[in-house]
Length: 419
Image 1: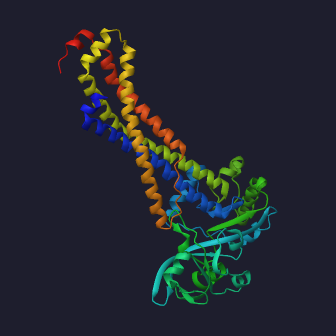
Image 2 (image 1 turned 180 degrees about the horizontal axis):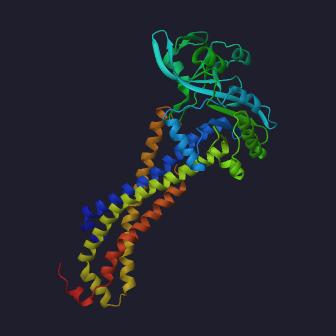
Image 3 (image 1 turned 90 degrees about the vertical axis):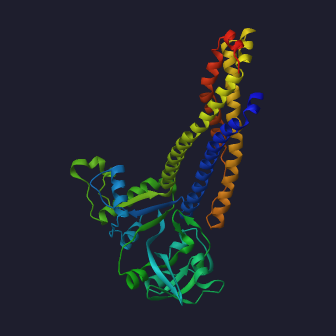
């Protein structure tokens, strides 16, 4: 340890390099858990007993290639207009389906007096409030009669209500969506954001009203179905596909009937909410692994600093090494001594890095919550295990070469060494 004290600056820089890398590991795991918690909360708000139907651009390819083509086409502005309210009505007749609603989401200009905002309008039917976990903070949701009669009524998200009305009661007030007037009949409880969508900024309207009075369209982006028995959800998924294919006149290819489940010709995608969670878990694991690889590269810089310090220490302690070998110390004894010292440096960096990463992760969670993002501060045990393993591995990896140099020294030459 005396050698470490004599090389304070070098040792500090070596420990600092490892500290930065290990703190990054802690932050990667903590951020992963925080983001996962946000997504889980939002997906679970739809219910694990739900099925989602969404539009998809048909493709000549199958499987992953088809999904990639569809995503690229949608990002470029392609619009699929084949999913209709008639599809929803047919799906509600399925034996295991006990409810459902359709959704069309659009960005519109919201006006109240001199206040003007662009907001997402969530157009749906009256069943939404019975299926979704979102609740009202005041007022009420619109009814089936209001939807069928094209009533101009609207429910505001918590944030858009604050922007337009502040602390005032908005119930009974009138706002405009584009140039069409709507009466405010309710305000949603705070819900938070999912990815780039802040549901508290949303405005909720009857879908028939928006379709016929504002937008002049008749199609949907999504359908959410609630099932009675989750144990037979796979059968319900298949029945959903069959009905939609019949409604959309999609026929299986004659030459590849066995591959019908994988064809890219569907203009829709059907998934259980549990499947969405599984997909996100896989994506989260892959992203975490990728970030850990990047962090490992940064740890190499710290490891090189550790190696440099160990070479200097070996050089300074050459006479001591010669003396130990002269009195019987074997190759493995010298190797073990210097490897332990190398690991101690990386473990010190790992301990400080774990504490630093934990503090920074906590600050991130506090900052996110201050912006209305429901970010849970979580430090999974595997993060500290990974940090410890990385510390030991890099200590051994970058301490081996200096340790071998020490262990291979000729005792006579080492005793004659002059610093």
